[in-house]
Amino acid sequence: MTLYHLRLAQLGERLRQTWLQPHRAFASGMDARSSENALLLNFHGSVAKAAGLGWQNAGRTLVDKTYLRILKDCFGLDFLGFSEDELAARLDGFIRQELAARWVQIAGNCGAEGLQLADQLLKACNLALFASEHVQTPTRQLMFYLCPQLPQLPYLSEPQKSIDNPLQTYQALLATLPVLPRPRQFAGDAHQQALIRQVIEGSDWWPRRVLAAWQAEVAHARCATVP
Image (cartoon, rainbow, N blue to C red):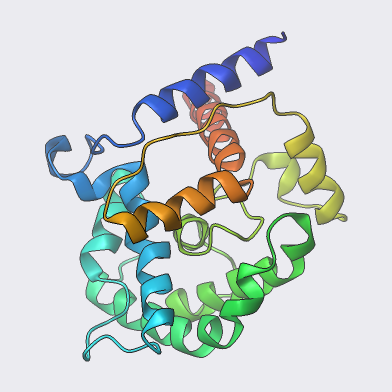
């Protein structure tokens, strides 16, 4: 086993062990809504619930602003001066205008075949949130939990920032991963547990999550060595 594979296995096991634990960066690690499992429920679960209710939520935004604050704190995101209230309203418009019409299509686009759709929605979400054509890190992180079925990563390493063949690059990245044990326990009621179990066991989201943790670690180490 190479050092790369060993580190991926270590990160995967650490993420699996802390899967249900609150993130220490939010509310001093005392709020269950900040666990990795809960992040998927906060975003993907909220949209899936809305889809089942005809995209209605009694006049409230489909994704609560508190969930955006949790995401921001857990990953140290910069919302570029926008408040969580404003971003929640903008995200609501994106979900209703872009995701609602494509929800069935999104569900059927797991894996590399969904790359084009993932790219389109990523750019549309970024435009809705930040009115910019330059895709921001918060948008990537948000979409990673909002639409986990789609083949995307929350962080792009240097070689990925300018690629001619995204399909080839995506497949090559996943091909480097060792077998990574996945979580087997899930939080929430029976419906919520089934929803997240489907994401974990029925898509490549978990390997991508581990890969993203490795990419973030490498980026942090690189920044630490820069004078």
